[in-house]
Length: 385
Figure 1 (tube, one colour):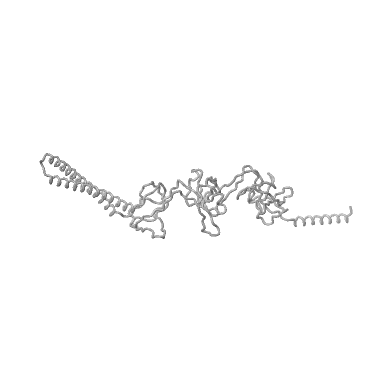
Figure 2 (cartoon, one colour):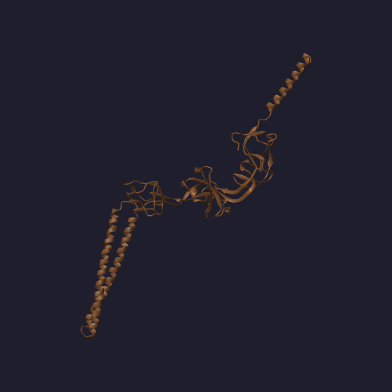
Protein backbone atom coordinates (compact mmCIF):
# COMPACT_ATOMS: atom_id res chain seq x y z
CA UNK A 1 0.00 0.00 0.00
CA UNK A 2 1.34 3.38 -0.99
CA UNK A 3 2.10 6.10 1.46
CA UNK A 4 -0.78 8.19 0.11
CA UNK A 5 -3.35 5.41 0.61
CA UNK A 6 -2.18 4.83 4.18
CA UNK A 7 -2.66 8.51 4.98
CA UNK A 8 -6.20 8.44 3.56
CA UNK A 9 -7.04 5.30 5.58
CA UNK A 10 -5.73 6.78 8.82
CA UNK A 11 -7.69 9.96 8.16
CA UNK A 12 -10.93 8.00 7.69
CA UNK A 13 -10.32 6.00 10.87
CA UNK A 14 -9.68 9.20 12.80
CA UNK A 15 -12.94 10.73 11.54
CA UNK A 16 -14.88 7.60 12.54
CA UNK A 17 -13.30 7.64 16.00
CA UNK A 18 -14.17 11.31 16.46
CA UNK A 19 -17.78 10.67 15.40
CA UNK A 20 -18.08 7.72 17.82
CA UNK A 21 -16.51 9.71 20.63
CA UNK A 22 -18.85 12.66 19.99
CA UNK A 23 -21.88 10.37 20.01
CA UNK A 24 -20.74 8.75 23.26
CA UNK A 25 -20.18 12.12 24.91
CA UNK A 26 -23.58 13.44 23.80
CA UNK A 27 -25.56 10.44 25.03
CA UNK A 28 -27.86 11.07 28.08
CA UNK A 29 -26.18 10.40 31.40
CA UNK A 30 -27.59 7.48 33.34
CA UNK A 31 -29.75 8.57 36.31
CA UNK A 32 -28.90 6.78 39.58
CA UNK A 33 -32.06 5.15 40.96
CA UNK A 34 -33.19 2.81 43.71
CA UNK A 35 -34.84 -0.40 42.58
CA UNK A 36 -37.15 -2.81 44.40
CA UNK A 37 -38.35 -6.22 43.30
CA UNK A 38 -41.99 -7.02 42.79
CA UNK A 39 -42.62 -9.86 45.24
CA UNK A 40 -45.26 -11.78 47.17
CA UNK A 41 -46.10 -10.73 50.72
CA UNK A 42 -48.66 -9.27 53.11
CA UNK A 43 -50.51 -6.04 52.39
CA UNK A 44 -52.64 -4.18 54.91
CA UNK A 45 -55.31 -1.55 54.46
CA UNK A 46 -54.83 0.82 57.33
CA UNK A 47 -55.85 4.14 58.83
CA UNK A 48 -53.29 6.29 60.61
CA UNK A 49 -53.55 9.30 62.88
CA UNK A 50 -53.51 12.78 61.37
CA UNK A 51 -51.34 14.29 64.10
CA UNK A 52 -48.96 12.74 66.60
CA UNK A 53 -50.68 10.82 69.37
CA UNK A 54 -49.57 10.56 72.99
CA UNK A 55 -48.63 7.68 75.26
CA UNK A 56 -50.79 8.02 78.38
CA UNK A 57 -51.19 6.31 81.72
CA UNK A 58 -54.56 4.70 82.45
CA UNK A 59 -54.47 6.33 85.88
CA UNK A 60 -52.89 9.71 86.56
CA UNK A 61 -53.83 11.96 89.47
CA UNK A 62 -52.78 15.61 89.68
CA UNK A 63 -53.32 16.23 93.37
CA UNK A 64 -53.60 19.59 95.11
CA UNK A 65 -54.81 20.54 98.62
CA UNK A 66 -58.31 21.94 98.91
CA UNK A 67 -57.18 24.51 101.48
CA UNK A 68 -54.15 26.77 101.80
CA UNK A 69 -51.43 26.58 104.41
CA UNK A 70 -47.80 25.92 105.19
CA UNK A 71 -46.22 22.65 104.05
CA UNK A 72 -45.32 20.76 107.23
CA UNK A 73 -44.66 17.26 105.90
CA UNK A 74 -43.39 16.22 102.46
CA UNK A 75 -42.24 12.60 102.74
CA UNK A 76 -42.00 11.87 98.98
CA UNK A 77 -39.77 13.04 96.15
CA UNK A 78 -39.90 12.99 92.38
CA UNK A 79 -39.42 9.44 91.12
CA UNK A 80 -40.52 7.73 94.36
CA UNK A 81 -42.76 4.66 94.19
CA UNK A 82 -45.72 4.91 96.56
CA UNK A 83 -48.58 2.69 97.71
CA UNK A 84 -52.28 3.47 97.84
CA UNK A 85 -53.20 5.19 101.12
CA UNK A 86 -49.72 6.60 101.70
CA UNK A 87 -49.44 10.22 102.87
CA UNK A 88 -47.79 12.30 100.14
CA UNK A 89 -48.17 15.85 101.40
CA UNK A 90 -49.38 17.52 104.59
CA UNK A 91 -50.17 21.12 105.56
CA UNK A 92 -49.59 22.40 109.12
CA UNK A 93 -52.56 21.08 111.09
CA UNK A 94 -51.65 21.02 114.81
CA UNK A 95 -54.84 22.96 115.62
CA UNK A 96 -56.98 20.45 113.75
CA UNK A 97 -55.21 17.54 115.46
CA UNK A 98 -56.04 19.14 118.80
CA UNK A 99 -59.67 19.58 117.77
CA UNK A 100 -59.84 15.93 116.77
CA UNK A 101 -58.36 14.84 120.10
CA UNK A 102 -60.85 17.08 121.93
CA UNK A 103 -63.73 15.59 119.96
CA UNK A 104 -62.60 12.06 120.85
CA UNK A 105 -62.32 12.95 124.57
CA UNK A 106 -65.75 14.58 124.47
CA UNK A 107 -67.13 11.41 122.89
CA UNK A 108 -65.81 9.31 125.75
CA UNK A 109 -67.27 11.74 128.28
CA UNK A 110 -70.71 11.74 126.67
CA UNK A 111 -70.65 7.94 126.59
CA UNK A 112 -70.08 7.90 130.35
CA UNK A 113 -72.81 10.47 130.98
CA UNK A 114 -75.22 8.52 128.81
CA UNK A 115 -74.43 5.32 130.67
CA UNK A 116 -75.05 7.09 133.98
CA UNK A 117 -78.36 8.55 132.83
CA UNK A 118 -79.57 5.20 131.55
CA UNK A 119 -78.63 3.43 134.79
CA UNK A 120 -80.57 6.06 136.77
CA UNK A 121 -83.53 5.56 134.41
CA UNK A 122 -83.47 1.80 135.00
CA UNK A 123 -83.44 2.31 138.80
CA UNK A 124 -86.36 4.76 138.59
CA UNK A 125 -88.34 2.28 136.50
CA UNK A 126 -87.79 -0.53 139.01
CA UNK A 127 -88.80 1.78 141.89
CA UNK A 128 -92.05 2.60 140.09
CA UNK A 129 -92.76 -1.08 139.51
CA UNK A 130 -92.22 -1.88 143.23
CA UNK A 131 -94.62 0.91 144.28
CA UNK A 132 -97.29 -0.57 142.00
CA UNK A 133 -96.95 -3.91 143.81
CA UNK A 134 -97.15 -2.20 147.19
CA UNK A 135 -100.28 -0.33 146.10
CA UNK A 136 -102.01 -3.63 145.44
CA UNK A 137 -101.30 -4.55 149.05
CA UNK A 138 -102.57 -1.15 150.20
CA UNK A 139 -99.15 -0.12 151.52
CA UNK A 140 -98.71 3.06 149.47
CA UNK A 141 -100.78 5.86 147.99
CA UNK A 142 -101.84 6.45 144.40
CA UNK A 143 -100.08 9.80 144.50
CA UNK A 144 -96.72 8.13 145.26
CA UNK A 145 -97.17 5.82 142.29
CA UNK A 146 -97.88 8.74 139.97
CA UNK A 147 -94.79 10.55 141.18
CA UNK A 148 -92.62 7.43 140.75
CA UNK A 149 -93.93 6.82 137.25
CA UNK A 150 -93.29 10.45 136.28
CA UNK A 151 -89.76 10.30 137.60
CA UNK A 152 -89.12 7.04 135.69
CA UNK A 153 -90.37 8.58 132.46
CA UNK A 154 -88.21 11.66 133.00
CA UNK A 155 -85.15 9.52 133.69
CA UNK A 156 -85.85 7.46 130.55
CA UNK A 157 -86.06 10.66 128.49
CA UNK A 158 -82.78 11.83 130.01
CA UNK A 159 -81.22 8.48 129.01
CA UNK A 160 -82.43 8.91 125.45
CA UNK A 161 -81.15 12.49 125.32
CA UNK A 162 -77.75 11.40 126.63
CA UNK A 163 -77.63 8.61 124.04
CA UNK A 164 -78.39 11.12 121.29
CA UNK A 165 -75.61 13.33 122.61
CA UNK A 166 -73.22 10.40 122.14
CA UNK A 167 -74.17 10.27 118.46
CA UNK A 168 -73.60 14.02 118.15
CA UNK A 169 -70.16 13.58 119.72
CA UNK A 170 -69.35 10.80 117.27
CA UNK A 171 -70.38 13.10 114.39
CA UNK A 172 -68.09 15.80 115.77
CA UNK A 173 -65.22 13.33 115.51
CA UNK A 174 -66.09 12.75 111.85
CA UNK A 175 -66.19 16.50 111.23
CA UNK A 176 -62.82 17.02 112.91
CA UNK A 177 -61.33 14.08 111.00
CA UNK A 178 -62.64 15.45 107.69
CA UNK A 179 -61.11 18.85 108.44
CA UNK A 180 -57.79 17.16 109.23
CA UNK A 181 -57.96 15.04 106.07
CA UNK A 182 -58.28 18.19 103.96
CA UNK A 183 -54.73 19.10 104.99
CA UNK A 184 -53.31 15.86 103.60
CA UNK A 185 -52.84 14.40 100.14
CA UNK A 186 -53.24 10.61 100.16
CA UNK A 187 -52.15 8.36 97.28
CA UNK A 188 -55.38 7.06 95.65
CA UNK A 189 -53.49 4.19 93.97
CA UNK A 190 -50.04 2.62 93.65
CA UNK A 191 -47.80 4.66 91.38
CA UNK A 192 -44.74 6.80 90.78
CA UNK A 193 -44.35 10.44 91.76
CA UNK A 194 -43.90 12.31 88.47
CA UNK A 195 -43.72 15.82 89.92
CA UNK A 196 -43.58 17.60 93.26
CA UNK A 197 -44.33 21.33 93.40
CA UNK A 198 -43.41 22.74 96.79
CA UNK A 199 -40.87 22.57 99.61
CA UNK A 200 -41.09 22.24 103.37
CA UNK A 201 -42.10 25.52 104.96
CA UNK A 202 -43.59 27.00 101.79
CA UNK A 203 -47.16 28.28 101.71
CA UNK A 204 -49.58 26.81 99.20
CA UNK A 205 -52.96 28.10 98.12
CA UNK A 206 -55.77 26.33 96.25
CA UNK A 207 -56.33 27.14 92.58
CA UNK A 208 -58.76 30.01 91.98
CA UNK A 209 -61.91 28.99 90.13
CA UNK A 210 -61.23 28.79 86.40
CA UNK A 211 -57.49 29.35 86.77
CA UNK A 212 -55.48 26.08 86.61
CA UNK A 213 -52.26 25.94 88.60
CA UNK A 214 -49.56 23.21 88.74
CA UNK A 215 -50.52 20.29 91.00
CA UNK A 216 -48.73 19.81 94.30
CA UNK A 217 -48.23 16.10 93.50
CA UNK A 218 -48.48 14.42 90.09
CA UNK A 219 -48.99 10.67 90.56
CA UNK A 220 -48.81 8.22 87.64
CA UNK A 221 -49.60 4.51 87.44
CA UNK A 222 -47.14 3.23 84.82
CA UNK A 223 -48.39 -0.35 84.97
CA UNK A 224 -51.18 0.52 82.53
CA UNK A 225 -50.33 2.52 79.39
CA UNK A 226 -52.26 3.26 76.19
CA UNK A 227 -52.00 5.53 73.16
CA UNK A 228 -54.47 8.29 72.39
CA UNK A 229 -54.36 9.50 68.79
CA UNK A 230 -56.55 11.70 66.55
CA UNK A 231 -58.09 10.11 63.43
CA UNK A 232 -59.51 12.14 60.55
CA UNK A 233 -63.31 12.29 60.72
CA UNK A 234 -63.51 10.77 57.21
CA UNK A 235 -61.67 7.62 58.33
CA UNK A 236 -63.28 7.28 61.76
CA UNK A 237 -66.50 5.43 60.69
CA UNK A 238 -64.48 2.41 59.52
CA UNK A 239 -62.75 1.94 62.87
CA UNK A 240 -64.34 -0.44 65.37
CA UNK A 241 -63.47 -1.35 68.94
CA UNK A 242 -61.30 -4.49 69.01
CA UNK A 243 -59.59 -3.91 65.64
CA UNK A 244 -55.86 -4.74 65.57
CA UNK A 245 -53.36 -1.91 65.29
CA UNK A 246 -49.64 -1.21 65.12
CA UNK A 247 -48.12 1.27 67.56
CA UNK A 248 -44.88 3.16 66.93
CA UNK A 249 -43.05 5.63 69.15
CA UNK A 250 -40.36 8.06 68.09
CA UNK A 251 -38.31 7.05 71.13
CA UNK A 252 -38.13 3.44 69.89
CA UNK A 253 -37.25 4.10 66.25
CA UNK A 254 -38.83 1.83 63.65
CA UNK A 255 -39.99 -0.77 66.17
CA UNK A 256 -43.70 -1.57 65.93
CA UNK A 257 -45.78 -2.88 68.82
CA UNK A 258 -49.05 -4.80 68.32
CA UNK A 259 -52.13 -3.23 69.84
CA UNK A 260 -55.91 -3.22 69.83
CA UNK A 261 -58.46 -0.40 69.65
CA UNK A 262 -60.14 -0.14 73.03
CA UNK A 263 -62.22 3.02 72.74
CA UNK A 264 -63.48 5.51 70.16
CA UNK A 265 -64.54 8.99 71.26
CA UNK A 266 -68.31 9.58 70.89
CA UNK A 267 -67.79 13.05 69.44
CA UNK A 268 -65.68 14.95 66.89
CA UNK A 269 -62.91 17.32 67.99
CA UNK A 270 -63.14 20.64 66.18
CA UNK A 271 -60.04 22.33 67.59
CA UNK A 272 -58.90 22.80 64.00
CA UNK A 273 -62.03 23.74 62.06
CA UNK A 274 -60.69 22.47 58.72
CA UNK A 275 -59.22 19.25 60.16
CA UNK A 276 -61.77 17.73 62.50
CA UNK A 277 -60.73 14.51 64.19
CA UNK A 278 -61.98 11.69 66.39
CA UNK A 279 -59.75 10.52 69.25
CA UNK A 280 -59.20 6.79 69.61
CA UNK A 281 -57.45 4.84 72.36
CA UNK A 282 -55.25 1.84 71.58
CA UNK A 283 -54.02 -0.72 74.14
CA UNK A 284 -50.78 -2.68 73.88
CA UNK A 285 -51.41 -6.37 73.23
CA UNK A 286 -48.46 -7.45 75.40
CA UNK A 287 -47.57 -5.94 78.79
CA UNK A 288 -43.90 -6.72 78.09
CA UNK A 289 -43.88 -4.16 75.26
CA UNK A 290 -44.55 -1.35 77.75
CA UNK A 291 -41.27 -1.83 79.62
CA UNK A 292 -39.16 1.34 79.80
CA UNK A 293 -41.92 3.45 78.25
CA UNK A 294 -42.76 6.82 79.78
CA UNK A 295 -46.16 8.56 79.67
CA UNK A 296 -45.99 11.57 77.40
CA UNK A 297 -44.00 9.91 74.59
CA UNK A 298 -45.04 10.89 71.07
CA UNK A 299 -46.79 7.94 69.41
CA UNK A 300 -48.51 6.93 66.17
CA UNK A 301 -51.10 4.23 65.53
CA UNK A 302 -51.96 2.33 62.38
CA UNK A 303 -55.37 0.67 62.64
CA UNK A 304 -55.62 -2.42 60.41
CA UNK A 305 -58.91 -2.45 58.51
CA UNK A 306 -58.22 -5.35 56.10
CA UNK A 307 -55.41 -7.81 55.28
CA UNK A 308 -54.21 -9.67 52.17
CA UNK A 309 -51.87 -12.59 52.74
CA UNK A 310 -49.33 -13.78 50.12
CA UNK A 311 -50.31 -11.29 47.44
CA UNK A 312 -48.24 -9.49 44.77
CA UNK A 313 -47.00 -6.20 46.19
CA UNK A 314 -44.66 -3.25 45.61
CA UNK A 315 -43.38 -0.53 47.92
CA UNK A 316 -45.96 2.27 47.91
CA UNK A 317 -43.21 4.84 47.43
CA UNK A 318 -42.74 3.52 43.88
CA UNK A 319 -46.32 4.24 42.77
CA UNK A 320 -46.83 7.28 40.51
CA UNK A 321 -50.00 9.32 40.18
CA UNK A 322 -52.60 7.58 38.06
CA UNK A 323 -51.42 4.13 39.24
CA UNK A 324 -48.28 3.93 37.12
CA UNK A 325 -44.77 2.63 37.84
CA UNK A 326 -41.33 2.76 36.22
CA UNK A 327 -40.32 -0.81 35.32
CA UNK A 328 -36.56 -1.38 34.95
CA UNK A 329 -35.36 -3.12 31.76
CA UNK A 330 -31.94 -4.66 32.50
CA UNK A 331 -31.30 -5.46 28.81
CA UNK A 332 -30.66 -1.82 27.93
CA UNK A 333 -30.74 -0.25 31.43
CA UNK A 334 -33.78 1.90 30.67
CA UNK A 335 -37.14 2.29 32.37
CA UNK A 336 -40.62 1.86 30.98
CA UNK A 337 -43.65 3.69 32.37
CA UNK A 338 -46.25 0.98 32.98
CA UNK A 339 -49.88 1.27 34.16
CA UNK A 340 -50.96 -1.10 36.94
CA UNK A 341 -54.11 -2.07 38.77
CA UNK A 342 -53.94 -1.93 42.56
CA UNK A 343 -55.85 -3.46 45.47
CA UNK A 344 -55.19 -2.82 49.15
CA UNK A 345 -52.67 -0.13 49.96
CA UNK A 346 -51.00 1.59 52.89
CA UNK A 347 -47.97 3.83 53.36
CA UNK A 348 -45.61 0.83 53.14
CA UNK A 349 -46.92 -1.60 50.50
CA UNK A 350 -49.49 -1.61 47.68
CA UNK A 351 -51.17 -4.72 46.29
CA UNK A 352 -50.80 -5.24 42.51
CA UNK A 353 -53.67 -7.06 40.84
CA UNK A 354 -52.55 -6.58 37.19
CA UNK A 355 -49.68 -5.07 35.19
CA UNK A 356 -46.61 -6.58 36.90
CA UNK A 357 -45.08 -9.97 37.54
CA UNK A 358 -43.08 -11.28 40.48
CA UNK A 359 -39.36 -10.74 40.01
CA UNK A 360 -39.62 -7.54 37.96
CA UNK A 361 -37.92 -4.45 39.33
CA UNK A 362 -39.44 -1.02 39.70
CA UNK A 363 -37.98 2.37 40.53
CA UNK A 364 -38.83 3.52 44.06
CA UNK A 365 -36.82 6.74 43.96
CA UNK A 366 -39.41 8.40 41.71
CA UNK A 367 -38.44 11.91 42.80
CA UNK A 368 -35.11 11.82 40.94
CA UNK A 369 -34.74 14.57 38.36
CA UNK A 370 -34.98 13.49 34.72
CA UNK A 371 -36.96 10.30 35.21
CA UNK A 372 -39.35 9.59 32.35
CA UNK A 373 -40.41 6.80 30.05
CA UNK A 374 -37.32 5.40 28.28
CA UNK A 375 -34.78 7.18 30.50
CA UNK A 376 -31.37 5.58 30.87
CA UNK A 377 -30.71 4.64 34.52
CA UNK A 378 -28.13 2.96 36.70
CA UNK A 379 -28.20 1.46 40.16
CA UNK A 380 -27.60 3.91 43.00
CA UNK A 381 -25.18 1.77 44.98
CA UNK A 382 -25.03 4.27 47.83
CA UNK A 383 -28.67 3.74 48.80
CA UNK A 384 -29.71 0.60 46.95
CA UNK A 385 -32.19 -1.57 48.80
